[in-house]
Amino acid sequence: MNVAALGTLEENGSPHVSFVTLAPQEDGTAILLLSDLARHTANIRRDVRVTMLVMANHARARGSNTDSGEDPLAEERITVHGAIEPYPVMQLEDGKALYVKHLPASAQYINFQDFNLYLFKPSKIFLVGGFGRIETFSADILIQG
Image (cartoon, rainbow, N blue to C red; front, side, top):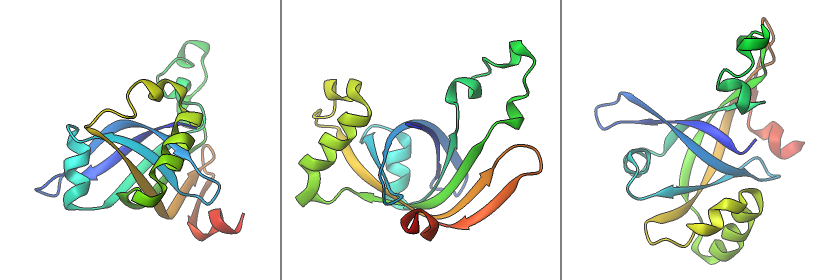
């Protein structure tokens, strides 16, 4: 799952949602490559609290399965609350390599001046496994396996 809807907070407190790509890590964190020109980047510079919605099958999230009669609301998805911080400078080259490994097309723009790596650290996870199958977890579950 390399795509997500990223929810940030506007200056007036209203939500802003955008589409982002990410490189999930084994420890439950995720690397994001964000442009300085993007509204979500301005928002996280003011308030690091974010929410991400990740679909098990993002093609279905676009509605491609509705033609087959399947209900997209029955699909698995997770909403993850957490915080974003700049990626550690001392590990920047390793972070870029990991990101490009997950998203090879990013090699074209990962070194642009206005793009920077960020680290998403989850705190709470809401798993929806379909109708009536909802679980809430602490992010510690990701680290514990």
